[in-house]
Length: 113
Length: 487
Image 1 (cartoon, chains in turn orange, purple):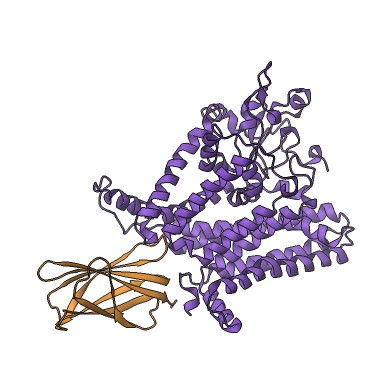
Image 2 (tube, each protein chain N blue to C red):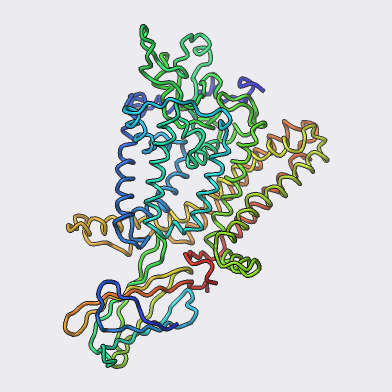
């Protein structure tokens, strides 16, 4: 699964692409990779990405994680999907200049183990 | 069978426990404004849920409308019904608004005679189950808020036009759920001494207490047409306590009783008639029982496989027709097959003199404990596994107003571990099965005194089939998706 995440608030030129493994996502630990690039397509380095994953229904606590920069502009995190169903992953990105971005990724239909 | 022939608990040696005699509690319930006092907090909570649902976070786990409606309200409701009685209807916030509105608009009409049954409410019960699946209400604070608003508006419209408690008795789907479930509750609003009622000439419990000269009602009697001396069981009783307040002899209590006993007997009941002649009530019991399984089926993985397969087979992309097929199977085909076969076997083996349909109607009430066991298992799963989530959601709601008075949200708070809750679920299902078997045996003994076992066995098999299906559902991996038809 790869795609561009949806901006929540701003129309900042920074694009965030994501990739989830395994595909389709299953209950358990999943690896999510993000690629941040500016308007010219250059990788955005040195960003801080806080990740929060919620289920679409009430009664589940969110899962929090931090994404680490593995390569320039390429960030990776591990999330534990505790239950099958629809998940929504929120990215709270802080760019090197301090500017903040919010992104939302819908991970629909996480399968049972 | 008349009420006096019902196996009674209240012998001289063993008087039932009466909540009205508990110090403090009895005083509270006897107080005329006890009901508004209990309704007011729920009204405030409803308004908060509506506002948060419409204007708060769009994510269900962070919204009070979805968290309180689909986790806490449903869980507390079934537990209170199991442990006490229909106390939610007592504290119903919709009735507080209705009561306030009736100060300005007096209803003029009586509820139409042709509609004095449960068919409308059975239809609405099914409609709520259907829209819950179709619009994924559990994942939408916005729709949940509008559902609560729609409820308030419906109450105002129905009871604005029609006298008495027409909405409660003939329309309200939550009320019907409570009425059916409360047949298994350990408490009942009932007279303490029949002799006192026999000597009573004013019948205030049904007519209302009136001014001697003007004949104006000062304290109303039962709005649901339940005449206390011949009232049997909890069906149609909202625990509103109007009869308690109206009775000039303080002869009505909230007494302990044997849960489900009222399902085993078939006396003529005030405001209801005979259970065995009420096809609409039997249909309500069927939707209550089979709907419990259907509602739980909607949250487990196999339901998505079934939906996808049905979608492909029927060549449809929309969820509504697929859900229509599933609902038809669960609520019509399956009950007709199971109950029809069981009724036919009972008639053949036990030589019951009843016709097939009356026989099926009579025994259908025996399935209610099984259905309630499933509702308990399902709702308590959500309630207990998400028990503490209301804390961070409330903290977050208050923090979003600009002042984190309760601190920063502690999102790590969830609830009891799923494996612990699963044991409780199994307990509820066992309890439901045991209750159904006892009720059905009681019905069989009454129906075929010479061959009760033969009358009992087919229905016991139906209960076992439902129990096995319930257990299977409980052990399926849970999967909550708002995108069913995506494959």
